[in-house]
Length: 201
Image 1 (spheres, helix red, strand yellow):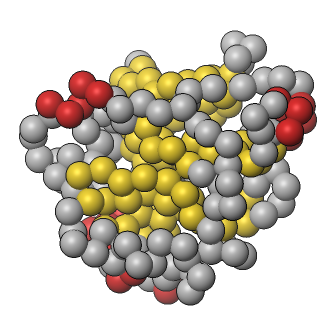
Image 2 (cartoon, rainbow, N blue to C red; image 1 turned 90 degrees about the vertical axis):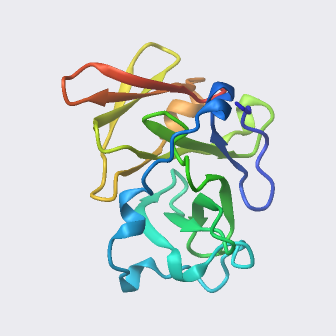
Image 3 (cartoon, rainbow, N blue to C red; image 1 turned 90 degrees about the horizontal axis):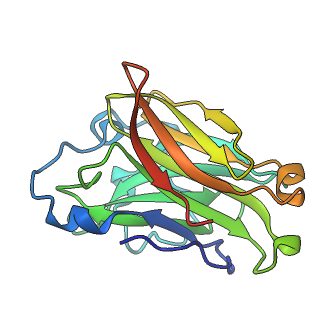
């Protein structure tokens, strides 16, 4: 199911993008690599994290950190739900604990794809009031690099962390120029595109 980004409310709504065809994907996948590594002090969720009642805090792994165009510090966490049936990707405001993102079935986190992304922004619905556009996500082991393609035909390379995660904050100057992030592209070891995820913009 693909969902368009909506206007961010208090927690800055993020939408985990999946594909309807993946509902038929029945092959069990390995958990994302980050959930298998030893837990570190930096993996602890903020005490004010909005979704502490839903996720298992002990399973959380901080897979990347980034700064929004406005300067706010964010981190991306992977975690299991308390019942263990889902694995969740949440973009987290480290100051307020506000979170947004989504979850997939724990047996099919990538739903047969190479990347899963979550897109968010503050403000809207008009272009003039949109700010802090960001895209976060995770990638499978066979992805060597990720880039974001913009509405003007240019692209921005996004670094993958050791936990196979990525985060990209769009410069406000690009937002003000009317640019939009359209597609996230996953590139394989051969240098060829192996997946494309539309952002909904």
